[in-house]
Image (tube, rainbow, N blue to C red; front, top):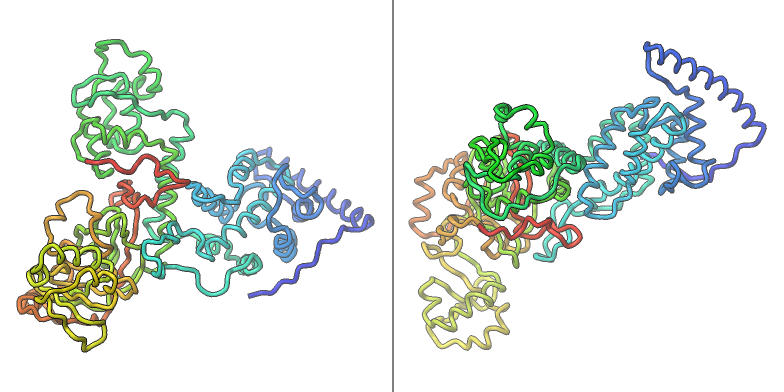
Length: 601
């Protein structure tokens, strides 16, 4: 990596300036000539290199400490280094237009700052304003270039130092080392401009910018939905519905046109389904139609028709609601989430893709906790999908990326201390034969071998509470085992893993944040077979071990990556935006979760 030594810029002598002025005047003449040619329609305006140099130098050295009127540069010294090495030529501008890398950088900055999760220092609003009013004035184009470089340094440092990871400081599992935690020395602003200079020398500026955002298809799909909701918010046409009674097929209401407009804006109508409406009805502002409504108005535009009901069902399905087709209370609540807040939520979920490695693997397990589902992915296609149960709100399952390196058939359950103290001991106090009925044993200590305590004798449970950490509670394999028949081992220090359960009925619940932190899977035998079949295990051989209730650990020859993620918004394989309740309150920004949580169905 190049090393830079900063020297303060020196004011140019008057004689040197005068000679440069003559050169610049000549360059200006060329620029005016090019501009005249542009007006004739044969080419676009260009900025001569000397004009570009003088304009960049003005903002770096001659301007009174601010750029574009009122913005102070954060990295003036670093910018001097990189622009001097680049002969004070624009980096992000192609004459008077953003180049490909510049457009990509602006898009990345806008998407990153859209959630308002933290106080971003990109000055993206000012940048966008200046870009929209960009003229053929060299100093104007140079100002945008310098501001983009300043924002790039800040953005690149945040990315490389893993400062754009939401929920990275959660204390649910305080000793757990989270995925993508910062390692090694902190990346400095000088490191960032060194990479920038290298990319300029190698002609790889666009590639450098592209590497600052996740390349995963899931991230890229969300960018389109973020743009959609930002456009709706910027249109000024959205406002919440005020529907006091549930609306069903055939009902009339002055706000039906607005419901229809919302669903159309969100992409819930199939293309062409509104062709039956008269053009003046589909193009008219729904507010005007609402104001024009009369009691018992016979016009079809106010009727909740079958096409709109179909769109409502589509909206309900992708929002995880009951597909009634009616504008009921949960549906109204979700329709009334402002697109501005929805855009924030999408942007925050986009950041969660930064937890994942660039290459997920040819075969891997992906769990979306907010959707309560697990998928076994092979070559980007789901081979097996199932429901899961995740940690309850007080014991939230952490976001992590690890590998499953072994599978335990007919497992024993070594009960964590916190669960023994909170759940097992209270049951044993109330019911003396509880431990025997549920196949529990107690050992003195965790070392092997350890002395077994006689659970049929009288036990001083009051004294046990204070010494629980010195004992090991073990539940033997069998139908009553809390881990069920299979455990999928994930290396970590908090006993977080995937496993079967002896309470299958819980998979019928819609809200399945019910465990003590581990992931319970709906189809454990199918998942075990899928992971072991290349090692000459079939369903019959797996069942034999389980039926014999003899614990057996099977190491995977090819460990399988597993990603426990939390996305409340994502785009599915059909291109539809999916939205789920924020069960863990991880979407909260400045203490608010945007009125999307706690919708009880």
